[in-house]
Structures are given as structure tokens and as C-alpha cells.
Length: 214
Image (cartoon, rainbow, N blue to C red):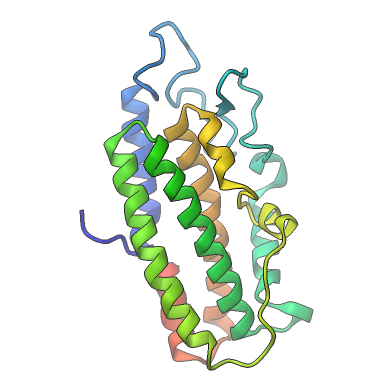
């Protein structure tokens, strides 16, 4: 599989989700388990169809309920991260996107160890490779930008649809479905930040990265 581009991620996530649906989720699930696979999954509420191993499906992934939070709130928080004090900042964009990409890498590393389906593992590896390359590029750009380095708090990450502790994903069942459920809002938060950068930034390198994301 070729290295993943950011533009190709939404389609690839959907493709993997469809494969998981056709496979009935985890192959190890019993044939009579109506909750296996992606049946009944509400794609408008990422994370709403998975449960921790050994637990009943309670409608949340690792304590995150993206459905109740709402994509509008997540997008608003994402935009706020690149506009400290209400003013757009290239430095804030670079810092927020690095933290965002690091979270995606951590989630994907968990997927490499826990995913059942080969397609999910290939997706995870491509995410790791592409995000690390972009982190390196962003760090290089950041060296030439003024302003204090900003780090996301756990609350910031949660409000943006990101997992505070990606390792919690390992306990999800079915895992592959949970990984996709959480990666979708994660990517949506990156798009929200990139859209602001495209509107406000005059830095050609920042705009190039933002265009790749959107």
C-alpha cells in the first residue's frame, strides 16, 4: 500500500469500515451475537458502538461520547486551538497539529498490536508513517515562528474529539470498529483546524499542509 496522504484518509477510513461491516466485526464473535460487526452503528456518533472487553455495550468509547458532544462543538474547539485570544496564529496551528498528529500515531500504534483485520493494521501503519513525516515538517516550520510553544491539555484533547489515553483503546471490543470510530472524529478535528489556517494564514508552508489535510 502506498504511503497515506491526508486527503486519502477519510475515504480509506470508510473503506475499512465497510470491510469490517462485511466481515461482521470480529471474526471471533459468536454467530448469534447481534452486536458483532457494525450493525446498528450510528456513524453520526463515533465511538457509540463499542464497549470495553468484558463489559456490556454502554454506548461510549473509553469514556468519550462523541455523539453527545456533537461534531459542531468539537469543530469549534478545534478552531479555538489555532486562534488563541480570538486571533489566528501559525505557531498555534503548528503546535496544535503536532499534538494532534502525535495522538493519531499513538492510536495507530495500539491498532498495530490489537487489530484483527489486516486492512486495519495497514491503515494504522500508513497513519504512523504519514503523521510522523508531517510532524517532522511542522517542527521544522515551527522553529521559524515566534510565540511560546502550546501543549494540549487532556481536556482540550477530549473537547476536540481526541482520546486522552489512546492505550484505553486496547480494551475496546470489537477493537477494529472502535479504532475507526475514534479515528474519524480525530481526523475531523484536524480538518477544522486546517480550514482556519487556509482562511487566515499567509505562510505558504502552513497553507500547503492545511491543503493536504482538507
